[in-house]
Length: 73
Image (cartoon, rainbow, N blue to C red; front, side, top):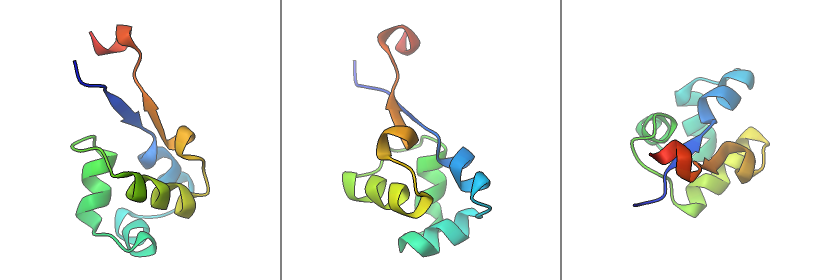
C-alpha cells in the first residue's frame, strides 16, 4: 500500500493571510500547484515542499505528515 501523506497547507496559508495565488507567487509556482497540493490531489516534490515551508515559515514536518497505518485502512 502506498504511503498516504496529509498536509496542513491550507491552515497555515490562511493563518498567514494569504490566498492561493499570493502563496503561489511567493513560491514561484502556479496557483494550480498550490491548490492541488493543498487538496491532496498530488504530493509535492521535496523542492516544492521546502518552498512551502520557507514561505509559510514552518518546518516541513509541520506542514506534511504520514498517516499512520490505522488511518490508511
